[in-house]
Amino acid sequence: MAAVRKDLFPRTEVGGVSVSRLIIGTNWMLGYSHRSPAQDCMITRRHSKPEAIADVVEVFLREGVDTVMGLFSNRPHVLDGFRMAEERVGRKLIIIDTPPINVNDSAAARREAEAMIAESRRNGATFCFPHHSCAEQLVNKNKQTMDRLPDYLKMIRDHGMIPGLSAHMPELIIYSDQNGYDVETYIQIFNAIGFLMQVEVEYIHRIIWGAKKPVMTIKPMAAGRLTPFVGLTFSWNAIRPCDMVTVGCMTPADAAEVVEISRAALEHRPPELSGRASPKKTEIMK
Image 1 (cartoon, rainbow, N blue to C red):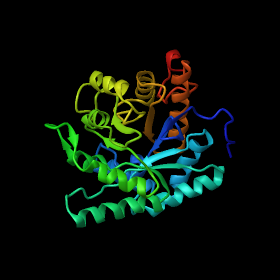
Image 2: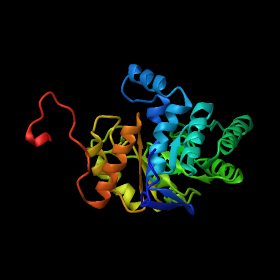
Image 3: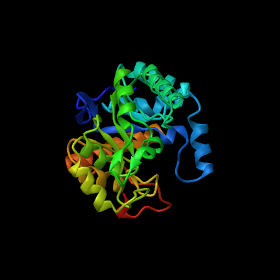
């Protein structure tokens, strides 16, 4: 069994909490491939048991990557896998939950939203960000506001968690900063080919660098459309020292590779990886 590294992965601070700059993503554990139904099924089959989750997370934890992001409601096997990995390594995970909440403007909807937020806390979340599909329903581009967002942020604070925003729409960062909403960070899609980004890469880069709080970037490899080396090298060199990169992995070997490529990018050196398989390797590929 691999030991815990002494030179743990670089860290930053969000809302007074120290977090690893590399964040464990969970789309490739939960079955959200952004590629095909067949790949979704492959992911969920592979990660249907806590042990499979733990095997991937353990690799990250031993490197000091102790921050994980995802939607964890009604996924007990994932949370069990987290606990299993924590026990193996002797290190706790910092959980960022992005629950889907009901943002309809009614008393019943608010009770439902608060119940979902309370579940995040019961699941051990330190951070709680309303899922982008919900948060973006509150956006008023005409007024440049997010109507009623403060109500949900207060619910998160009241339940002892740190609020942030899950954003596919880049306006969420701009409006949050303009209006002084009580968020400590924001999730934003950022990758070299603009996959799922609503405006060009250059504009998202500008928004990240102008943000008042640290940014948690997601989809650095564009759901497999970029190789880990290309996607991660771009991301680490295009964000600020306070910002983070979130990446999901299928296997423990994937996780180890992601960590090494990320360390290499931050240290401005080539990653120490063997060449990929080929029927006949040339000298260039060795």
